[in-house]
Image (cartoon, rainbow, N blue to C red; front, side, top):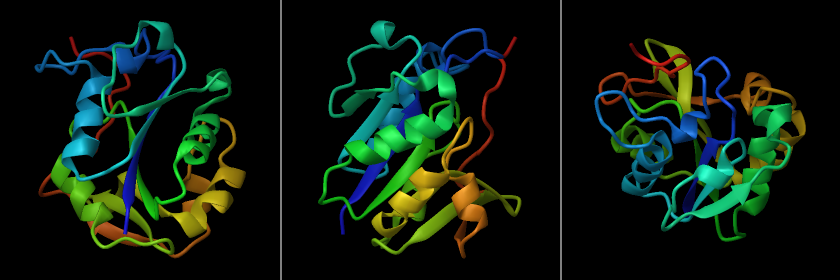
Length: 183
């Protein structure tokens, strides 16, 4: 089975004060977009699609990734999910979806969520029992997830309507997202 990676990194980061893709991981010095791309790559995802939008013209080169520019990024995360799913090649059986503003997610969490996945698989990482990222969408679920990804929500409405396998990742990752810069 081929497990791809999909990095959603198109938002303006209004609460953050800048596009998060171009922000630096606190205490690390690496740009969030490069950090997240490395996490997917180290998590055995191939191919990887990165969806950029706000600030795309200032984004660094992202070797090894297929970059998609979401011209509709202002409409929210839903359009980025749709653009990213549409850009994945036909040999991909399932895709691990990661948000750019979750630098505490590790390659081990990506591997765990992606392990043995196929076209019918639907999984979500959990932290303290609550769903988070990464999320895995088997190809059989792409059309349905894309249809419900409207506004500033991604796959959440689709996941809520289906039986989702949960994958505890507390022991290997921190699933918190960075909404505001650290002081």
